[in-house]
Length: 183
Image (cartoon, rainbow, N blue to C red; front, side, top):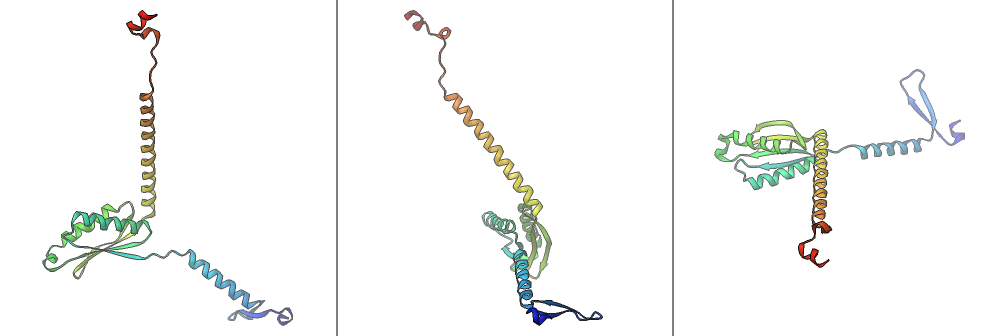
């Protein structure tokens, strides 16, 4: 029957009693299954882990630069592994590294949240930050509201400046004595 229609006889459930078979175009079925798999892989989110390394004696400029990069990674949807690298006697003061990690977490609280709290790993102290969609949405809404408020203030100032530039015409009652004698 399957050969007459130019189709294949495919066993669907071999372990059932009796075994279940189906008449179908097996090549077409395999192609459609491959297309569904390909589509599902496209929609899957690929979270990558980026790493940013700090030192216990980092300067404020370097700290700000690296922290802004961490923020950008989080806003892009990546996880960030923040590492404090200790050398020599710096190992005696792990609280310095912990303070830096806390400052980083505070600076990017609007973009991400701490997933793995600071822990010592040999000569390094590690913390993992992950993107926080709710915090990012609230922060973006706050930024848009601030931008709208600034635009409204700017428009009001521009309107006030236009009103101040407009020349005021004198009425006859306000005429100067010299103008009154000429009439």
